[in-house]
Length: 318
Length: 290
Image 1: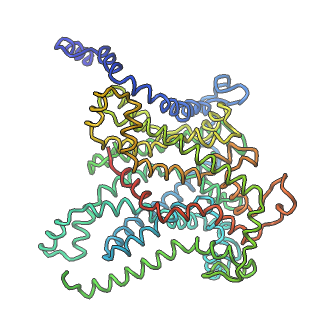
Image 2: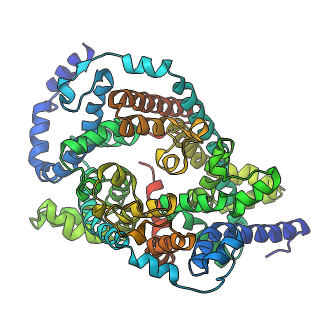
Image 3: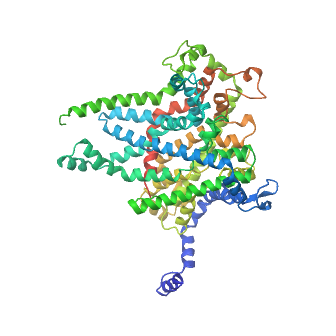
């Protein structure tokens, strides 16, 4: 109601109506709107149509009948998933792998950036950086092949671990090592690349603050705690929001390349389960329901984390 | 500079030692693959994963790799996807980025919200799979090009670059009667070239490295891109190719796997040292919030 009165007031006070705003906007910008059509078509076809297609989670989808022709079943697939043994297994695995990844791979690039920042020889520092970004550009297939070689019973890491534990198999065939292999290799792949953002945040910290801290008698630790860390804190929080927002979306590609039936019990995460149930076992509606559950939880989680961060620190994604 | 305290000196020495170990750890896996691929198979087996230099130099592994038809067809397919894909990527990303960078466009902010929303929410891979299938793109290389035509993250980088170009340039071009499309491609695009170069690299590396969509959409082996061939050879140690000759179907020795990896990674290895700073630049631009 209040908006309606507001609108009339605006019109009375001489401000233009919506329809005339739209008309003049079109006259001014029609070329831009025409240019953006291919982009809109792309988003509608490859992003919004799949979102619409996700309604098959509430149907018994039959590819022959199509999305519209298939019968509604309500929340049946969701209930089936929640009641299945797999639900707790994949949820547990997802949370374990994800939380371990965050615990290791979130602080590591920050520490690396702080250490790189302490290197005084410019050439050496840029050499370290160049080398550390490199693994990021190796394809996932090749990275996983390297992981396979190195944790094999004859490999460098696998051989070493086996010599301690007396095991005789590749670590990839032992479910208990899966999380460690996944997280450790993730550290190798991304620690350097993820540090870039912190290195650049560090270089933006005002040098005068360091001088002021020194005059106040701060030692190196004091500088770190009172100047450096507060200086890069907004960056850290933004990155943390993004990480936490993806808590339940452990990437399936790497899992699919690394796991095998021997390790499913510890390696199968929600999205790899979706892939296997959907595209390998043709349970289309069921796996869509699982996927939709996952994206919804992720989205709500991101909104929640962002909201909390906004309240606590006034830093947010949007 | 003022004199360093003893504690500081110790720290710097330890830090340097740590950094050297760190660099070795980053490089070693690739180095191992590289030297092992030129080494004798039995020597590599004996080395147990710790090989610092070539042992028993031989190029036998490479000879076997180059005899595999699938390697050549894979390379060809990947190059096609790369060239056509990056062209379409850049074209669409520029159009979208330019639109989003314009101010005073009534629908601009709503379209921006609709686009950014897709970064955080998706329908999942099964509906995506059927969307692509319904468009009859499955079993076609276009399935690897069109559905990934725009990366929203890259488009935001593009938008940031266009926003940084002074409005006066657009205004004066408009006064000269220039159309938006020519403002975009004749004025804005050349000025944003450093960012465009970064995006070409990002999209290029993405196409070179991606395999998942190829796995779910392609059925004919002669259409497989390199990474998919690579996956069979290095992760399953086989070329399970019905069409291939008996020689191909033999179990593949480790050094052949290593050589395959080198062949498939060589372009990245070669361009990386020169392009590294451009890659990094993209992260900086992407980090600018707004």
